[in-house]
Image 1 (tube, rainbow, N blue to C red):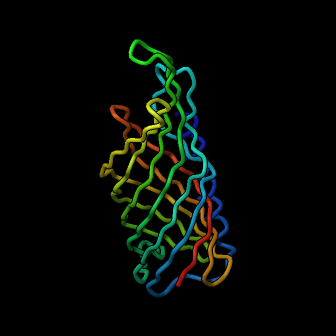
Image 2 (image 1 turned 45 degrees about the vertical axis):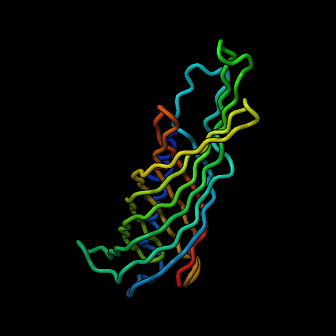
Image 3 (image 1 turned 120 degrees about the vertical axis):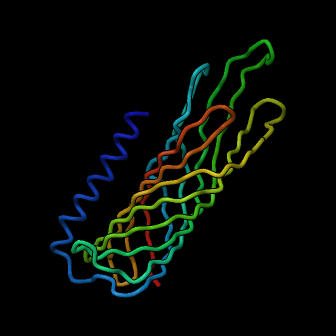
Length: 211
């Protein structure tokens, strides 16, 4: 868990440093009016922070994860010399399965494999600092998240539960054209499977379009 968080935060810090350094050389492309935007990201890494106690094998790294989102940013204002925009964003995210296998027990004559997956819909407040072709943003909001568990016992039965959870994120945008940007995001997505509580740390890359 510690190594994963360290990797994610180091990657975001590197991106942010590059954005600030690169902004000094970028062309003057600061936004001057309200914007609507949308984008899609695919996860470079997504990992569940879940306990593996009692398992014979446990893989908390998820595959086939990502998100789509759309948002609105009001016309920017100057704050301490920085061009700042505020707005709101809707995001749908899907995180692939984490796999855990438990040994046979008195109640189960066979070992049991559990597949845990998550998807959710989030609404967040967005604060964005604009540096010419680069922009940095922070996001905080709430999500309606659904956690599914599929068991290898009883005919691969699936159960799912829904929760309201807080979500947080950081992002960087680089404009490669007037309306197109390359994006890198970190999202912290809390989740719960029975009594096992944790978070999903997702680092994703993608493309955005400004309308």
